[in-house]
Image 1 (tube, rainbow, N blue to C red):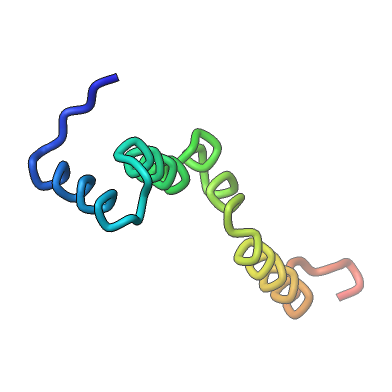
Image 2 (cartoon, one colour):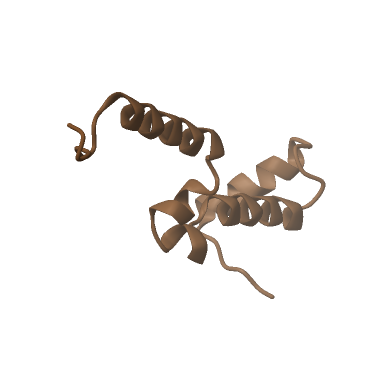
Length: 82
């Protein structure tokens, strides 16, 4: 595979290797692509809010707790006794 980069990005890749941050130019590109893949939406997260919440379980748990507490403190419908 051949990748063509603008001169600025090519210098950045070379500088990362020269500084010893990465052992090779291939490693610079591989790490960058892996990070991009981790931060890109997947079909599951792009499918809707529940799929998007998959990666933030704590936030989903807090939203669920808040909803359940709100349900306990309000009357949602009247019973025949009221």
